[in-house]
Length: 168
Image (cartoon, rainbow, N blue to C red; front, side, top):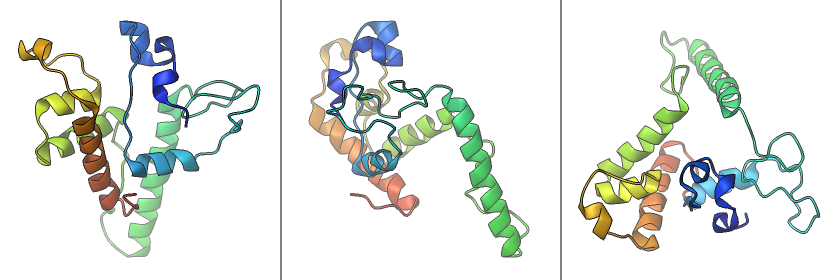
């Protein structure tokens, strides 16, 4: 992937609001999953290279209507979980049924795992891209990249382990 720091602020949803670019740190498992996604114009040397992490159906465009994709994915995963439960003659679907999980629930889960692993609020705030916790110390406190990257890797590795994915 091209460095997210090179993407102009207006290219990120938050950038349109704040006028600032935002670096999004990803754990190795997330990078592996994103690299496995199909690329329509994957050659970075190509004239019409698409710089978006998740490309859209139109050439040079980012994916739009993520909610539509999420609903299809959620239905497919839930249907498979119910089918596997039925095949196993269980009365209830296994825990992977996600019919009522929202995209925002995934953010909350990430933050909750970070908190459960003992990461302080300041780190969790940075992980989520929040600007303020409403604290005076926010004005004086700045984080280096290292603890944020370490937290992303630890949280991502924990979640990858739950999903049976490689942590690297």
